[in-house]
Length: 167
Picture 1: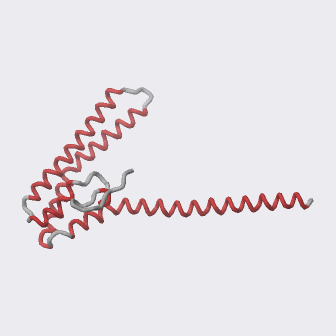
Picture 2: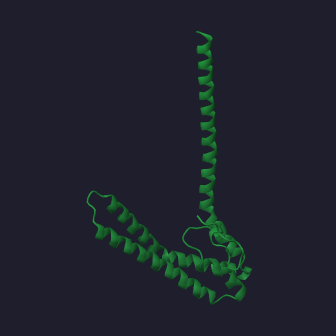
Picture 3: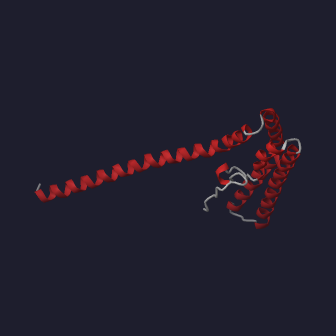
């Protein structure tokens, strides 16, 4: 082989190795970030709720936890119905024969079920607030500002200077 061919082969080999190293590094870094984000999303709700309960007066913590758990269990069928109706709407939207009226109806039923569940949770929370003192009520009032599975960082406590970033 000529020296020119060897130089070209060496350059190609170096470029290929650099590309492989960069690709491997990218995969490792991205994978770690994705795993961290998934873990954060999974535990943020539990941590934030536990943190909120821990800020209540000690004599109220267990009663509040039990009351809110019972409320969530009572509202669970409404949220399950909402998810089921939405899944049905998605399936019908992807079906070969599209029926807009049926999809629209399912989505309306899904929204209605979700609103029933939310209304139940909010009504139970308001009843619970009536049994708490002002300090505990102020701590627990944060639950009315939370939406779905979003984390506490998306909804800072009332009166705080923290502003959530726009997406």
